[in-house]
Length: 328
Image (cartoon, rainbow, N blue to C red; front, top):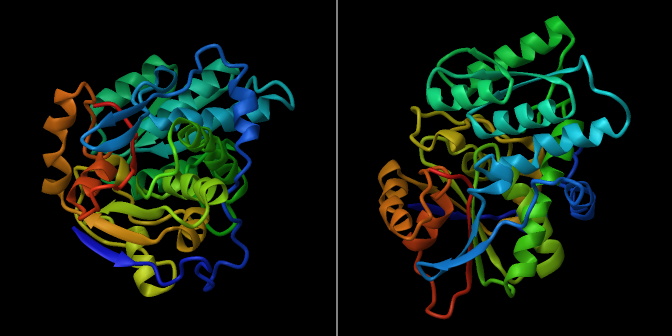
């Protein structure tokens, strides 16, 4: 595992970030909507392997924390009027697409999900079961995102990405706000941790959680952001002192295999995270049997933060928070 300290802690990256909004800390907004959702319930906090593990594997029956994001955006837009005839399009490595599909189905909209060839076919099947149209585009997430963006422009559809870039901030900012529900629950389920490990793809989960944890718990918890060594998007940007596009082969940590960070997440994490870590494919895989034996079966993506925590040299009295972000 490679780890670098964040030299921008407390200040944040300045280069190219002036127009980028910081992550929301308004956890009350998504929680007010979720309180009206009949399938919503608080995700459990589990004590295992010497860690406090927030188990998102059963969230709203969709299998991951992503249930809190896109579906919240769609529910928020539905408050302004009917969404009948509206089409939301996105690229996904699986879980984000499930949230778009579920939200669209509930509120009478259509969903079109672009998947790369490397996304397991089981995700495509689950998306179709939710009523979404699935389009296979390209060999990686970046290619499927390009396809979704082009389709949105040609067809007049609403692009609902879980990432953000110059000129595209409003919907992903709202989407990250949905993840604050998970972070707020953590603050109510345990005393302030000494160490927090947050896995990241484009950085939405990590950016949202870190922002709320700093707002509620202050500067004491040490927050480490964990990425695959094949996709060091945030790690590389912090190292370079500006947004950079990372390169690498396809990672088994498929939902984290994102070569470009969300600008909103990068802005927040450059301010809020103490360190950035990269883990190997083997290091991510090693923790899975231990979790499965504890009825916490997950994937290398979902357990990346847990793997990094177990690889770290922590004091014996450490109170560690990790998030198991998806089911197996």
